[in-house]
Length: 170
Image 1 (cartoon, rainbow, N blue to C red):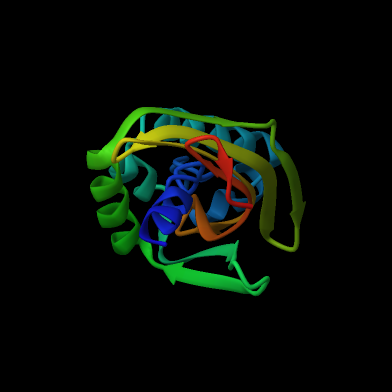
Image 2 (cartoon, rainbow, N blue to C red):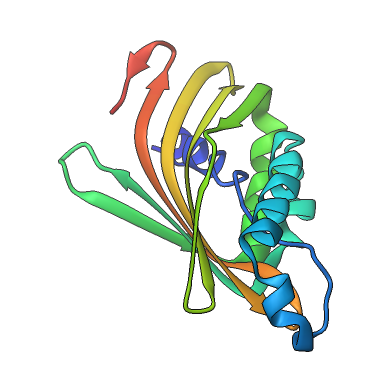
């Protein structure tokens, strides 16, 4: 089960967040679909480099990262973590990953009520402790304007498939 949980952590680098620096008086100019898309592109670049510290700079201090995955009995488990825990777990996971490749679909962005909701599918492939892993997840990220910056405030990842050494786990 530890390897199973580790593989899901690898999906989290597909974070979408903003690094645009503006004053709060420019909120209408900053929080646009274009500014969110620009942030998404910057975060994708950091995710593809497997740089959790860089990704974390785009997260709010109070971010909640929730990962949902199925259990063998059909129930679901949810694991929540915060920014610092994310960074530490990702750094540890990268120590065990070889040939790590991350990809995602083009995001859909909806802006409503002061929030941007970004949806996409993330796929990761890696060899972890000698086992080849492929994982796919649906991801929803919430971005908000905080102190003049577009920041990610919540990530919800739902694992949809996991394969270890060619054997489908779910």
